[in-house]
Length: 215
Image (cartoon, rainbow, N blue to C red):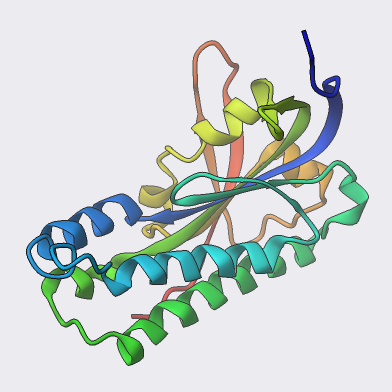
């Protein structure tokens, strides 16, 4: 039996950039254009726009991070050398700049789209949130690609579903676990404290930083 490369252990940051409202937006667009664009074999502009948004996120965080995978509405990146990623205020600046670029790309949709239906207009409801965690993980070679596995990887993904939006009053925010705050010396001014519990893990402490969104 032929096997791939042996799994390797790493330790460092795990970052997820997730587009809020992605799934419901594309469903509404699909339903609205079922009898016109899709019926003629064309694809609504919204799909190209979503690809552009994901490309923009990747372009902002890779490097200094390494792309693990695209997960539909999220970009998952990591680093095996924690010293290579921004620290302190620069970490927040990096993610804030990514969000600002995301908002600029959203704004451009109104200049290039010809469709004015209610479904496509709901693109304004999309926004971007980040989850930054850190810890040990394993890099495995599976089906010719690399996969990150381990309890800290699971935890990072679980933190996409929290009470953070209600805490700061917005779907646009940066959630950084206490471990990552400490590891990367991220300042906590302007943030709110959040504690989440996921069985069988101990409570996870995090800081949530609201991101400014203009409509």
